[in-house]
Length: 289
Image 1: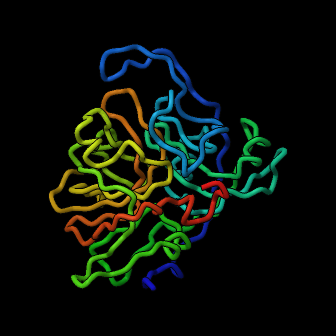
Image 2: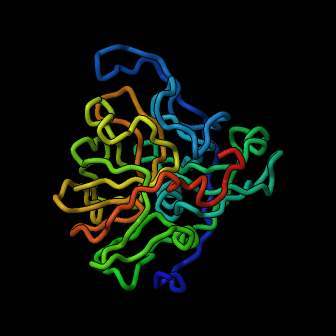
């Protein structure tokens, strides 16, 4: 078992409200074609973690339910303190007291995404509130000082099949590896404690070489030569492990979003391909996945 400082972490209550989805004409594709498509926000009734993150007639679509706060300071707190794997409880309305799980953070939009059962989503309405037991900020791996952890609930960490190899590297299961050369929006941010980092899918040769056509919401993926310790930069030998949080996109520089969970600037992470490395399976969030 990995030794951590979980007993020293602060647990806090944060909340957010289901926001209205956006859809504003026109988006111009990377090929110069104007299109009108669904975008971010709201309640996405037919998409959850475990579903494909590619191929939708959409741009930046988010799985499950999206929440945020209208007050900027409160929304910063929600997006920074909430962690992937945190419990989220519906605070009122027809689905009051039903539970979900935080599964993503989307930068730019500054949204937090929550996965819930299909039948629960049908009961929700725009404006319903969620209360999240935020727990995870400040988490450290005591025996791996060269690996930084962020945006991760300690309970989720315990369910991951993580081991140390003979060289002392942290072996973490992922569904795909992704070269930093195709990472786009989010590059240059001075922090990775909220938001995400987009995989550009416009170079078909690279997409096919790395098998990225079948990326799914909730997949754990390894970004090779990407360091997100103090922001998002290209760095040879660095490795970042993150989770797919929104869909592919038609707009230049964008694509499936990745929220950081682990990063090592000197390559002390060894990704291991495991097709089952998806949060829907790891946390048994769906009976049909």
